[in-house]
Length: 105
Image 1 (cartoon, rainbow, N blue to C red):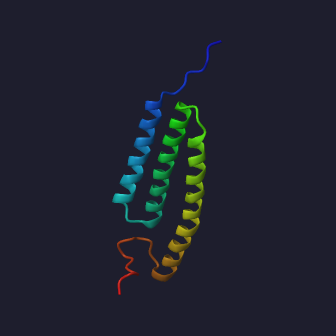
Image 2: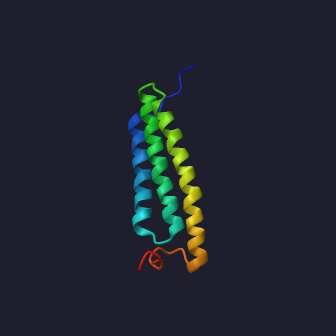
């Protein structure tokens, strides 16, 4: 029985790039705060995929360690970000970033 085929590094990096670009387009085009938030998460996951791909290529665990820290920061970001979005929604009754001008004096 032959060994399973490994996915080439270039394919994983291409997938990571595509996911990052989808997230970037979501941040730049959408006006809904929740969709922007999910797009930022896509960008973080694309970076995680690149870390894991390089770590696998180099036979090192450093990439997985970086992924662990990125996931920890992402979890904290989600908790704080969603709390802020919920408070803004309660105050302004909208989550569209064009309609929120809380920082104006």
